[in-house]
Image (cartoon, rainbow, N blue to C red; front, top):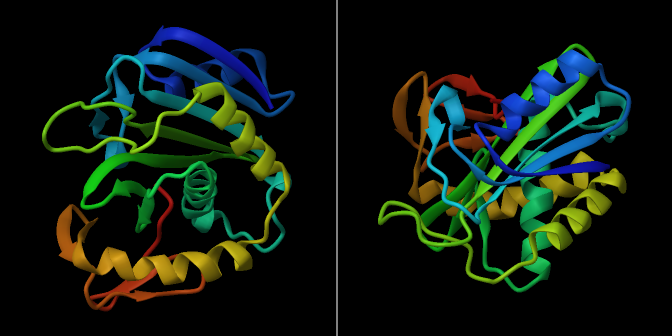
Length: 211
């Protein structure tokens, strides 16, 4: 994975997509920045960032993913791998369905995933320090480049979706105390049924994690 490290950018996700559009895709690529001024959150919302937090986006050809990973499960897959890397360093971070990073009861970051033809893009933002009272931050100190190297090393192993899902479905129980946005409405996850493809069954609707 080639890594481009920027000091400041509007959005690593937008920057990466424009870069690929201009130069075409040749190899897996990551863009990271010390500060982003207009980060993209779920459902097109902005993600408030602070200088020094972790912001990165990467692009892969879909054939570099495990054979049993359905594309709609990719957001959970990418998020869970990072959670496991941070957990290995001593963090108590956990993943709320479908792609929100939490420490204790507070959100500290999230993942967005999009697909363009044979390419899959993933953007992740993670608070490493206090932003405001609504959000938490990572409970350990990290070297950002070291964590990225560990993360992409883990991604290259092509761990099966089955293995990731078997772990995630246990952690999913923590999500039941929270709500998720379904069709622009906040809906309780208390009685949601987690499907094998990472989607949930809630109020007679099947909701996928890709976003």
